[in-house]
Image (cartoon, rainbow, N blue to C red; front, side):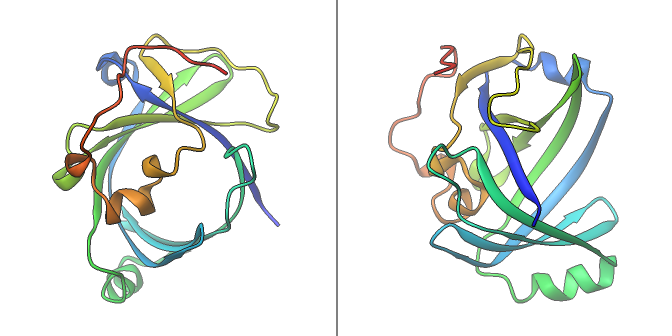
Length: 168
């Protein structure tokens, strides 16, 4: 079983764009997203992916993840099976120390939200923090892409501050 361990942060400025070594467009939908278990279809530029994720552990950092690459036509067909709503974003890859941060800038119903994630080998692995990182939101379900599809960022009644640093 593949285990995904990651930490997620709000982004406080757009300096990540100048620091990025690569970016690509992502469109994704969900066939299923119940009880923290998700089946996702993603189109990244001209490639498709089918991903299955299990529920997060108590810390919100670790969860089972399985992913399989699909042809673009296969992914487009599976998109037709997805629940209503779609996630549309650009992902920027930023190298910082020995880690690569994935910074997602959302559009549409989630316009204005920018989050950064870093994948780790273990929950206690140290990592450096690039200057664009803001508040840590690891484990906060409303920031999960599957949750953003159901309750988009633009519909939140109170937007949390993005300039504080909480490494908990």
